[in-house]
Image 1: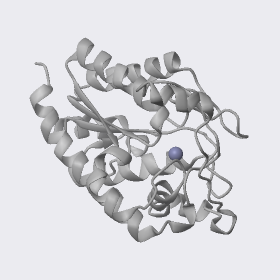
Image 2: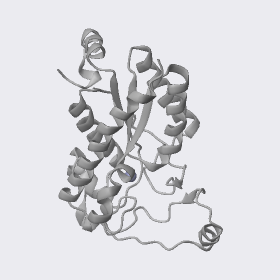
Image 3: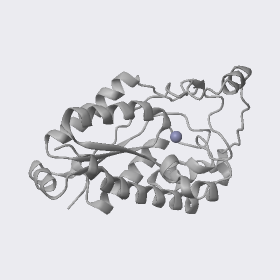
Length: 248
Ligand SMILES: [Zn+2]
């Protein structure tokens, strides 16, 4: 049977929730990703990792939430095609989607996140869902989950650079990558950023200085596959760990 909720009838869904208490919600964004990457870059990544994870554990796969926050952590609205939704709206959408699943028997939810700027909103949403329903939630992100293989695989990880482009090349989004247009960008910190960093501050919003960071030309599908596989393994472990946090 399909894992994808959109392809299920209502009876299929009812049967699926008797077989599993797990669901995966992929979350991405519409955002500029260098001169080589499609605007839906993070959507393809979130969906690919989410689909692999749901298939492996037999979880229900929810539709992709394809809009996200592009002015949190980094402001990427300075580049064409970026569509930024406020964190307040995204927190509500993530929370309410999770609560709708909890209402129908789902006890464990993993958000497969493709975009760093969504992380703060997701952190609040997973707390809300757990607090209000007892359903345990986690966020799976390749730049965190694949940390053990990243230093081996990538010289310079960064937004739409070697690491992220490799992960995209392992997904269905690969056909939209324009490698012949890939450019290396290593923007230095501005004077203001140097001062903030020297003060030991990590939490501040930075205007994205270039549409990608690092050299996407170093990206390969093979490196991407390894990072994705490591991420999916972590997702399987996370679903196991979430059992402990389900509130009866
Ligand atoms: Zn991205």
